[in-house]
Image 1 (cartoon, rainbow, N blue to C red):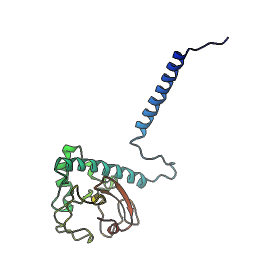
Image 2: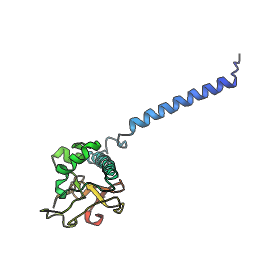
Image 3: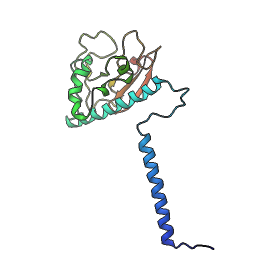
Image 4: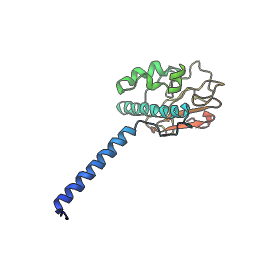
Length: 190
């Protein structure tokens, strides 16, 4: 015995099926949005996950910094020295949703290491290293897109936070992009 389906019933069935597929896809997508890419457990390294979490934190701070600049005629916050990042930047960005935790690389968070270094400052102050940092580095909306805004703190003669053997770090640019660098920072610092 065959059952016939009229056109309206067929269209309703297709619409309900497509709606269910779209709802499932959205649920899966939003559930995966905040997770780093899946890696087999046997090859996943904590540092790899930390690089991803670090990049997401820097990107979130970048959005807050861009909102601040938009509210202040294109000018990004300026700290007195790059070493003043946490003390001076957190009070300014708290109203933009930035927490103390977001100003700290997840690797540094575990080890009690330094906060990110902010790259819009009036002077280097007593900081003798790194030599490649400019004496003054003030960022505005007219700065080139690859101008540094914030980066993992690097300590003289130590590897970066994302490597046990060499300089390896994330850095945030004015255009909101976050880049990973393995090697000397001086080559990409702007």
